[in-house]
Length: 146
Image (cartoon, rainbow, N blue to C red; front, side):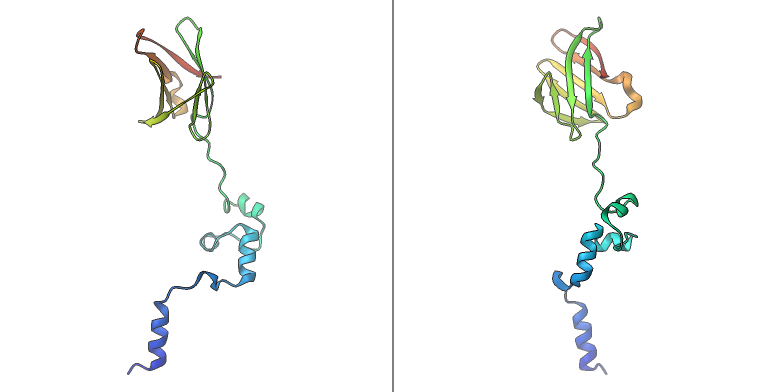
């Protein structure tokens, strides 16, 4: 026979916990340590500082760097500069100081200015495959990191 207390306890399991149900002292430790309840279960120590937990791989993640980020130079076959390219960590591209739109295509960052299409590979081992192509004059050339 099910008692009223058992039924009430079972019903209580189906109710969501309120977000303010965390003990204030515990919440303060979480804030100080940079941990969350989830990362604490994975090993983040709430008794350490944010810096100590970051060294252990918990807390705020380091900013991701784009493999395309940096200064690039597009040159023609004669070695003359066609354009200077700058790419930030969010893959925002500037060609000769002007912002251009870009897209990721098959592991490469592709962008276009006028008749010239630039392709920079994301794999650093493919350095000789970074190139530009001018569809008007049908010329091409390499792109190298500055």
